[in-house]
Image (tube, chains in turn cyan, green):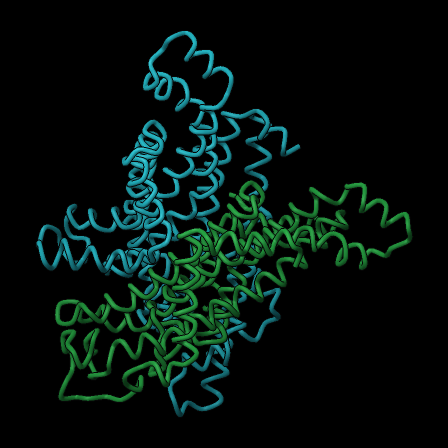
Amino acid sequence: MLNYSIKRVLLLVPIFLAVSVVIFMIIHLVPGDPIDNLIQIGSSPEQKAALVARYGLDQPLLVQYGVWLGKLSGGDLGDAMILRRPVSELIGENLPHSLRLGGLAFLFSTIVGIATGALAAVFKDRWIDRAVMALILLGSTLPSFWLGLLMILLFAVQLEWFPVSGARTWTALVLPVLTIGLHGVALVARVTRAAMLDIGRRDFVLMLHAKGLSHRRIQLQHVLRHALLPVVTILSLRIGWIVGGAVTIEFVFARPGLGSLLITSLAQRDYPVVQGCLLMLAVAVMLGTLLGDLVQASMDPRVREHLR
Amino acid sequence: MSRRKQSALWRVVGTWRGGLSLAVLLAIALAAIFAPWVAPYPYDIQNLSATNRAPSIAHWLGTDEFGRDVLSRIIYGARTSLTVALTAIFGSVTLGMCLGAAAGYFGGLFDRIVTAIVDLTWSFPEVLIALIFVAILGAGLYSTMIAISIAYLAQFARLTRAQIMAIKSETYVEAAANLGSGHFHILFRHLLPNAITPVIVAGMLATGDAIILEATLGFFGLGVQPPKPSWGAMMSSGSAQIFLAPWTILGPGLAIAIAVVSLNLFGDALIDALDIRNRVRDI
């Protein structure tokens, strides 16, 4: 296990380098000269040259990447062009909001997803199962931002139970968590249900029935426990999806967070902030996947064999 | 198309899920193609004396902040949304299939490189991949298409590779090789025809996701630029006046929901009819 963990962590280095190259290239691949966004109209060529030199844009690309990476390791992500503040400061302010939202949504979808999936499997082909299957279809097909807007309309505008937007109180978290959570619940419930039905056909379950245990007890005590392995697999594979969902939902609910910051800076072409946000989100996905892989490897020795 | 697949298609149309969803999809496609005749108003005619009107007989789904008819804009918006989603997925399936097939068939270093890239993008949410490429390419119609294509590439490469790996050591492939067929011939005449069905069905299911992703980018204001209507962009301007005119977000959202649910039901019915559930399910 220790061997696997070390190898898995070392694997992060090439992945991080690959991702950082793509994100570094953003500023050089965008249409137009990046410096054109910075200089005022009517500046002289000398002023432009001074700016180019200041941002190091006259250096070879590889040198620029090296300098960028070097600064990055010191936590320096450059300065925002429009907000005129260090990008690392902006990210530091927004990151906790994203983590809180993503973490709660993950927790919510895991618990509620396993519970509803198990319920559907126990009452297979009864009305509870049908209702859960309909919920799964809706949860995995409706666009999440539309769901968010509907929640705002119903619970914030009509019923006035929760605030429409912002992040000043804890109650402001309820609607965003529910919106992201519904997608996760649909995914987890589908996998739980399918796994439980699959395990339910195994011989040892037949044996338990023969022993005279009640159907419900067999399902909840024996089948569910064996069905949890595929659920953990899917959760660990899709841990990054929580970050992805949060990007959209933060924007819908006008919450502070990396997602909102990324989208507003994209619209304003504030590329240092865009790079910083994408880098942070990518790192979050990579660390999440790492965590998922480690959990999976600790449960299933076959996974450890895979990375040899 | 083989006779078995043809009869499967008829069986799908026969079930209520398959028949109903196909009818809805055809209706949406026809409405989009014949938009100038179907839509009650042009999409860009403003009527500043009738802004933000609630649904009525004259405007079935109400009017937006410039007094434009919401229903007409949804019908024209279907053109944008469907074109973007279909083009993007077509490109994604084609390229992904070539990469996956070549990787699975030839193996070796090329396979390792493709697998590494696929595994890397696989762990990233599609929205994030699309946003990275929109950041590089800038907002707009074509960059949205390219960004969505890239976002789903890994899925099809992975799926095709798995299919090819499963059948490449079958006896008929070996026989073809022993008879002197070239790699190209074996790939395109023997392997791909037997691997293509699950990939096409997965592409159909992904088209629904692509419609949502296009709408999401449009909602962020990074997709098709105004005054051209798209479902996502309509909701983006509608969300600014959610208190005043909620129907401006209800209509386009409902259109997306109906299109995506139909695509999923049809794809699902097709999976059942072809009996390929364990081949498509590639979580």
